[in-house]
Image 1: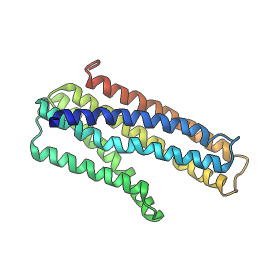
Image 2: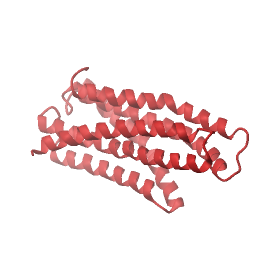
Image 3: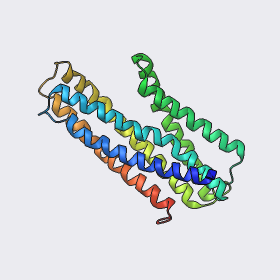
Image 4: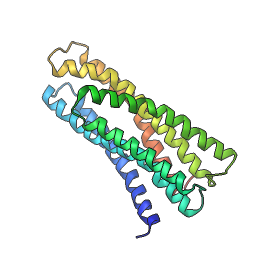
Amino acid sequence: MSVYLFLKLLHVLLFAFWLGTDMGTYYSSKFVVNPKLTPGQRTTALNILLGCDLGPRIAMPLVTPTGLHMASLMGIAKIGSSGLVGIWIISILWLILVLAAHFSKNEPLKKNLKNIDFWIRPILVIGIGAVAIYNLIYPTHLIAPFLNYKLLVLCGLILCGLGIRQQLAKFTPAFIDLVSGNETPDTNAIMKKRMDNCMPYVYGIWTGTIACAALGLHLIG
């Protein structure tokens, strides 16, 4: 199997993994906020949700290097070997950060890693967005316009993820109150409201991932 075909396979699998596990996250969330279930059942549902949510977190750092590497091999992106190495290093470091934040058993460290992951995302959005817009105006490195459109959609996906995190930051204290027996009459209402507030971002992610696939297949753009 050639490098290009391997990257193409990986790129497609990342898309399927991202969208599929994100839908699993959405389905699990319905059980998390269901007041008819016991706290233990809802905790189990939350653990399933967090496990499914790891899918998009893994896929996001890897879709860009696989896509740009393929574009370079196709000749529609002028990225040198050192540039590709740099892109892969940044992406893998981001992936390591995501995995460390998810699996760490050290709660203070886990919190710090999640904060680092949260704040590097706006930086990535600014950097990736600037590259995409520049190359749409002056196509010096990313020759095919659809590559820049995909990068801009990726920026939107990252921002949607940040929006979800902001809502879940307010959801988490209410859920902790529930499982610790300190719930109030407003606890379930708070949890449902915050989860409902996540839905526009979730729909945005689904729309964006499908749009990226359509751009990659040249159905649009």
